[in-house]
Length: 197
Image 1 (tube, rainbow, N blue to C red):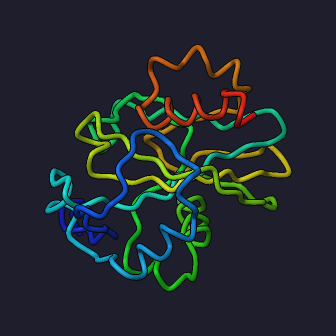
Image 2 (image 1 turned 135 degrees about the vertical axis):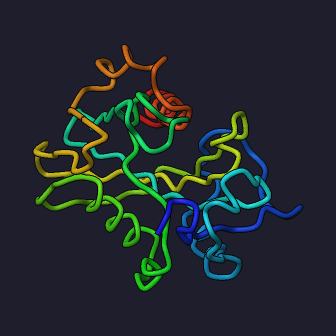
């Protein structure tokens, strides 16, 4: 299967679709779960990658242990040239047909998390918000469900040969801000704002 023929979960963004920029907690997790259940469809990635009338659902998991977060860097050989060499706070990916056998977004996110990283400890998930970025071509076709996975240790390793990562405090992560993908900058701003600390 090629990247273009991969079936990915999407929702159609019609006139009733909420309109916002950045990360919002005002839209509850139950909204996106109902949206996926009622209006979700699987389309070939090649047909929706440049079509902003459909939003591809992306579980976006932040791994945290105490005061540190896991920061990854996509290496220059990364398959999506638009994200090549960028830093990311989020671990996740597209939802495929086999994923919907799981009952919740959190369960889908756990599968994505397990595919991307090697971590064997317990995790406690919490919902941070729904993320949308209409300012660039990547953001316009994706909708992020942002979750925080609180781990009992910081022993986490990237599985993908096209990425690397390490645990850092938010203040340490600040030096990479300008090299982060847009979503991660938005999440970082949310985490460092007074209301989210």
